[in-house]
Length: 462
Image 1 (tube, rainbow, N blue to C red):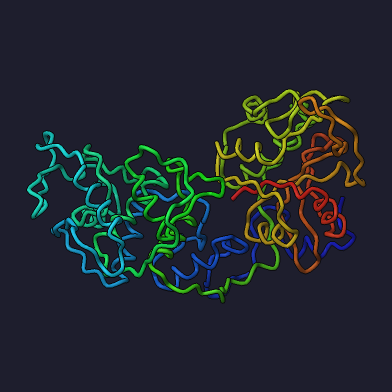
Image 2 (image 1 turned 30 degrees about the horizontal axis):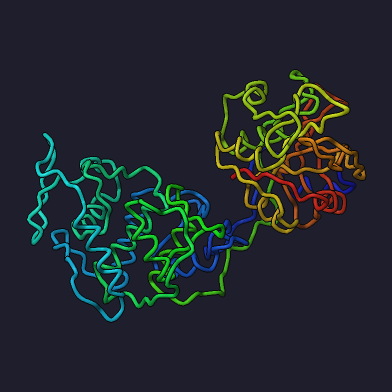
């Protein structure tokens, strides 16, 4: 299906041969923070010089924070707030109250540090570090030679900020957990209590999954101070990785900076076409109902992922289920069915895609957000209808219950958008009419937008 006006293709250059974008102006907030829930918190920290994006002018807010990144961010925050960090500092043991930190918090911190189990003698080849005033010798971290944050990590260690496990390892490239994040910030508060203006906001936080954990006091104390919170179901999930956005919010809560709500972004490109290697679900694989995973694999390859993965390999590892598309692909992507709703919903499809690259469930996003994502160079799998026809429905048995679901479901990859003509560029895996040739075309927003909005099901590849 091609647009009646060919100017869209002419404006965007050669159909998918190169990524085309209009020149960007001076950088402001990274565009991948548009519409993100932590947009203002991250922007505020950026304005204070605490955190920054990547060289490609993205922030990647949902990407996990590594332990070395977290150490660098905490070091930067403390430095910005006026702490003179000393790599031979004494770890204090508090015994009294301060104006800003409740007595219980200080007692908890003292108990935490006094309970640390550090070896009395270093292992062979390890350096010794003696903390003045504590009369304890323990091995310094020995796995930092390849870490850009080595000096900052060692300095924070000497100041008692980083949790110790007695192994002499810091593991700088591992993802930071939510529990570890709380412990680091808690230690910072108790190391420099005069720096933070924090008062309790609750006496008993509603968090149920911290019993018996070594980081329980840190999490519960910070929850009482309003620095951390659970996820709404009573759980803190201390062993989950913490994202860059989540850690930014904790840093901002700790620093107490007022939110800067007047976020400015770079202007979006007028037109983007993402180079996409075409994959047919029809030939040679004959995956007659495998449009969703086929579209996803095209998007992955467009972003440089899964380069050596064939469609048949990709389909073989796809999660399968007998009837519920919320759990995996129903039936077989090779076998059409009149009784099964042969599809897979965005959440399990995105989870599967994350084995190969940065894939996220994009469901529920508006057409404006869909366009922005594509203009930023990120292809999006969208669930629409076959041949762009009006949707029609049938009843299907989903794990014993009857559900009315769209019968003429189809998924395609949006790999371009032209804001001047309001046409999308589509890689359609169902090239049934010419199975030996690629099937790319432009389609008007007047056609695509209402069909996308029927379900707002989508998966983005970044």
